[in-house]
Length: 599
Ligand SMILES: Cc1cc2nc3c(=O)[nH]c(=O)nc-3n(C[C@H](O)[C@H](O)[C@H](O)COP(=O)(O)OP(=O)(O)OC[C@H]3O[C@@H](n4cnc5c(N)ncnc54)[C@H](O)[C@@H]3O)c2cc1C
Ligand SMILES: Cc1cc2nc3c(=O)[nH]c(=O)nc-3n(C[C@H](O)[C@H](O)[C@H](O)COP(=O)(O)O)c2cc1C
Image (cartoon, rainbow, N blue to C red):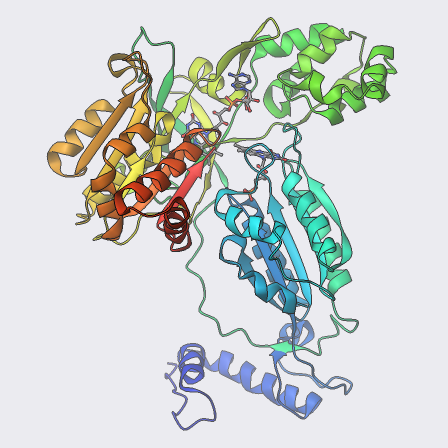
C-alpha cells in the first residue's frame, strides 16, 4: 500500500509551491517517488546546481536520471504565442504549438488576442501569432478591439522582437487570410524581425499548419535546444479530461421543418441519437456536420467536364470534394491545366476577383468549357469541409441526444438556382432513421455564467439555437438567474422557430422574458435591435445588475446592428456621450459579459 507523504511547510519553497508539490508528490506511488528521487539526483550530477528544469527526453525514457556531459543548465526560453480565433481552430493550434515548444525547452505563454495587453508585446523576445480571418476580411469578434489598437497609432514599437505569423482562412472568401497578412505586415512595420515566413492556410489547415509549427519552432529555438539540458517539471494543475472530439455517427431521430408550409424558408430541427453516450457537449458548443454534395450538381459538373461516364469519380466528388467553391486559385489552376485562352485573359486583365464573386466552380466549366481528365477536375477541388451548427439542446434535459437547427440556404445567381451544400444535404436528402457524421466543436467562449447570474440572449433566425440549449440547461439545473430572450424572423405565423418551447419556458420559469420582432408582419421592418431600443431601460438595468449579454446568428449585419444599438441605448439611458457608452460596452466585452457566436 502506498502511503501519502507531505512536504513540510518549512521546506525552502513558497507556500503556493509547497501546495503544488504536495499535489504531485503526496499521492505519488513508490515507483513514481523513486523515479523522481533518481531524476533529481541525476540532475544534480549533471548540473551541480538548481535552475528552471525540464524533463529531458533521455531521462524520461530511461526512467532514471543519467549523467550527461557537463554544460550549464539554462532557464527555459520565453515564447509568446498570441491567437486570434472565433471558432477555436487558431486557439487549438496555439495549444499544440505550446505543447511542442515546451518539449524544446521553451516556456510558452499562450494569450488570446482578446486579452492581450499590447504593452507586453514589446518585451516578448520571441513571438508567434496565429490568426483567423472572419466576416469579410475582419478579425475574429472578440479580438477586434486589440487588433484595432495594434493597427492604430498607439501601438508599441517591437524592435528586436523575433516573430512569425500563421494565417488561417478560407480561399472561398475574397479577403483570404486578410487578418494574418495585415498582422504580419504590421509587426514588421513596428520594428519586429520576421524570422519565420507567413503561411496562409485554407480550411484543410492541419497539415500545412503542423509543418509551419515544426519549422517555426526550429527557427525560434535556442541554438542548443533539444540537447536535454533545459529541465522543467510541470507541476501545473492538469486540465480536466477533454471531451471526445472524434468524428462519430449519429442516427436522425427527428427531422422536422419548423417553418409553416407557407413560409419561403425551410429551417430543419434535427434530433440526433448516438450509438453510445453523446459527445460531452456544453451549452454554447457546436457540432461540425460532414455533408455530401448534391448528386444533381455533381452530374452537371461531370457533364461540363466531359466525364459523365466516370462513376468512381462521381462517387468521390459527391462524398469528399468541395465542388462548389470557386476561388482565384481555382481559376489559376484551371488556366494552367487547360491553357484556356479566355481564362488566361481573365487573369491577365486582372478581372478574376470580380468574375468569381457569387459564382461557383460549375460556372467556370460551363462558361469556359474544355474537356478535362479526372485528375485535372479533381485538382480544381479541395477536400469537402464540415459545416458548424450550434447545438440547440442541453444534455441535462435530452440525455444522449443533440439537437440542431439548420436553415436551408437557397438563392439564385447568374441565372442558376444555387443550394448550400450542407444545409440542403440535411433538408433534402437526410431523413428520419438515416445517419450522419458529426464532430463536437467545443466553444468555451460562449458558455453560461454562474447559475445565479441573469442572461440576455439575442438570437434571431437560427441564432436562437444555442439559447434553446441555455434555457434547457438552466431549467434542468434549477438555475436561479433570470433569462431574457430576443428573437426575430420574418413572419409570426410562419417562422416562429421553437414557438411552443418558448411558451412552455415562459410558463415554467425557464425564460423570464421574451421579446420578438417579425420583420415582415408590418410595413416598417422591425428587427431585434429595434426591440432592444424599445426595452432599453430595463435592459440597461439588467446589465448594470450584472447580466451577461449574448448574441448569436448573422455576423454581416445583425451582430453589428445589435452592438451599435446597445451603445446607443446606453448613451440614452445613462445620458452619457456616445464615446462613454462605447466604453461601457467595451468594458462588458473585456469582462466577458458581452459574448458573441456569429457567422
Ligand atoms: C460556429 C457556427 C455556428 C453555426 N450555427 C448554425 C446554426 O445553428 N444553424 C444554421 O443554419 N447555420 C449555422 N451556421 C452556418 C453553417 O455552418 C453554414 O455556413 C450554413 O448552413 C451554410 O452552409 P451550406 O453548406 O448549406 O452552404 P455553402 O455551400 O457553404 O454555401 C454558403 C455560401 O453561399 C453563398 N450564399 C449564400 N446565400 C447567398 C445569397 N443569398 N446570395 C449569394 N450568395 C449566397 C455565400 O458565399 C455563402 O458563404 C453556423 C456557422 C458557424 C461558424
Ligand atoms: C462566417 C465566416 C466568415 C469567414 N470569413 C473569412 C474571410 O473573410 N477570409 C478568410 O480567409 N477566411 C474566412 N473564414 C474562414 C475562417 O478564417 C476559417 O474557418 C478559420 O479556420 C477559422 O479559424 P478560428 O476557428 O480560429 O476562428 C470565414 C469563416 C466563417 C465561418
